[in-house]
Image 1: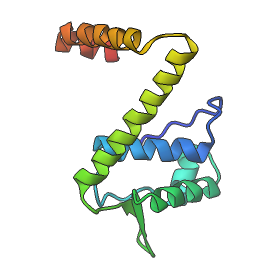
Image 2: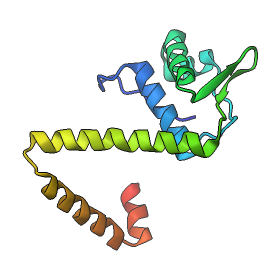
Image 3: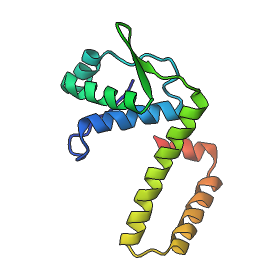
Length: 138
């Protein structure tokens, strides 16, 4: 599991972990039933305290993203993989939309201007070949 911590981000470390695990579940990088690293292992890997991981896993469990099995660790929760993935995908995109709308408001963009800009960007992305997209991702 590849989690990146950014100390300059301003977002609490446990929240960065929660957000990245949520994203991995929503995108299918983590599958239902898959084990998460043990608390101490992940804490050492990320160079954070075990309490940070405990807090992150606790929040993920409260949200129904993961389940803890006493003596067996923490794993991605079931309850319908499509339902969980759809809910997380929607949550992620809605957070991005909210941020975009707030930024557009601060920059005095109208909703029409914003939609036009989105359509232009989408058309530009659609016009690129798969090789263009692959080279721009690296």
